[in-house]
Image (tube, rainbow, N blue to C red; front, side, top):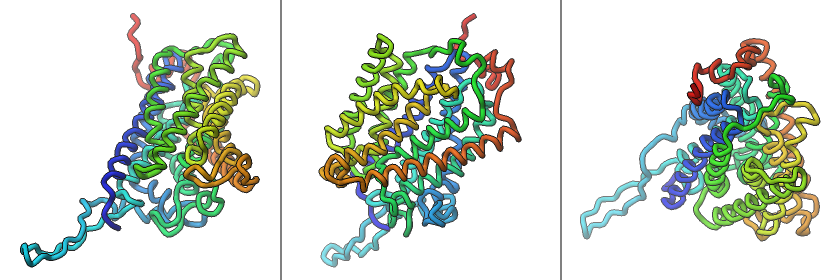
Length: 438
């Protein structure tokens, strides 16, 4: 309880809005990558996550993520149920009595804080993370998942996967409760802004869901090219813009850590885009617009966990490595036969793993996280922590997502029938088309 810092509060309110903008950005990024008959559904899957996750978050999600630890699994879901005890007015500092002016003493009015900001602002900031993580999963199952089934899946997945994993990774002891999550406090793996909780989590969930759902009709033989590349580039630009709230906002203050993470985010993203384009040029003979947009997103993903722990050279190296690996990884679906429609696995799962594990090599004590990785004399101590944290999230998310997907498949059903899929999911599920071509 106390009086918040107004500068930090202003920055975090702005950061929360920036992160929310990422979800419409993702909607355009994904929407441009599908065929014209599926763009509305793709937009709706992202936008609907904004509604579902918001309702669940304020009821019990925030409490599951940031309440006192229960069994090293989740926060106490009743501690902040309905944001109990958090909604209130402004804090006011105490005023001493002054007989000379006749001023009466005024007691301080304190509000719940997270660090130096109102806890309600932190609630809003973390809500935006939850929304986009759920929305990210949708790219793996474009064109064939019933919209109603998506809505139910999104709510279940947020509850049983995202909220507990967010507790493991983001809930530090003593901030909102006495005890936080095991990855943050016991394992002490570094994940500044969500390489594990957001990107590995959503990427491997996309893999599990698309395996249960099955391939699109005609994939991979039939052409399924992006219908609107300007949409894709617009989405990538909005994501890059909003990501400054995502990464620099995770400093939860407007000081030097936010400045450092802002710079490393920019460096790695630029490097990854160039690395992706170079990989395309060498492999395919040309660099593409889709490649540039995908490289931007890959760079943002790989620097998300590591932006607080690397210097300029580390950010450059992580960007280049991540851009190359993700550019190569998106082709795995053709070799292994899983239909990850919009490369959620290749970009988010592989990028999240890359960025999280490379902290163990490139972290330097001169960066805000103040930890040395293998290349800076720290040995393998941080590396093993990063590997354990990354694969714990990967395995948990894959197993629980698979269970949820099969549960829905054998109850309400997951997939459109063949005729509906052939005619287009927009008409089948929404009775609308994006473009009036007649």
